[in-house]
Image (tube, rainbow, N blue to C red; front, side, top):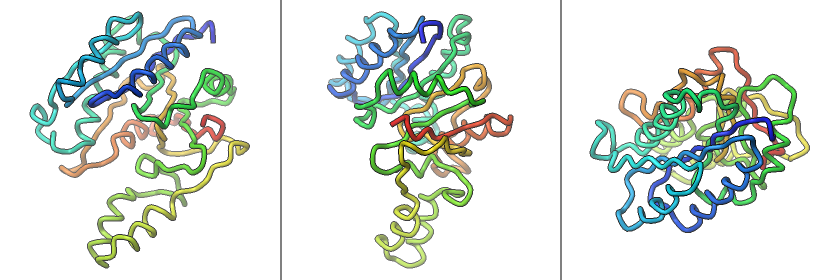
Length: 252
């Protein structure tokens, strides 16, 4: 992708040594593009973990924004999804307030955990080479597709599974039974040889967006004061504008 420009964005709390290695991996992947930036949005970290980020921010092409304690700053800061949504919206703001960055080709949003340890440039390059008319592609997992919280697809996950879990548990008092019914039964294996899977929303720890298609989209982490997956609203914005979103089985 020597002629393309990419932005890699992540939110992090209490960055670990593995996170530092993950950022280095994405720096190496970014070097295969014409231009790249890595945007790291920190919030709610212990002071002792922040030194790692102060070291990273001095690297070329890396932007680190320290938001501090969102639990104290936000009205609904006690909701994890609300804090994450606020942090994710911060990297969206950075992109579209920059005359340079908003003209980049791709935004690649990644989680800060070990789920991206086997992701590499070849897999990303193959995804970007797909000629179909897509606006977003989301990662698959090696064994089972686990991220039902961010997933919406008819006849698979068409409602909030966590809300369904809580409602079921409140009715029957059996958490294990409720978990099997509302969560486990929705976890599937997606084989890498399958075709692109059209979805209304997904994430799976890594998502690629065409930047020209996401202007105006925002993450929302609550509905009527209750936690909701922040990806749903962001992806719905694209869906309402007839954009196409897919899980890419080969993007493991």
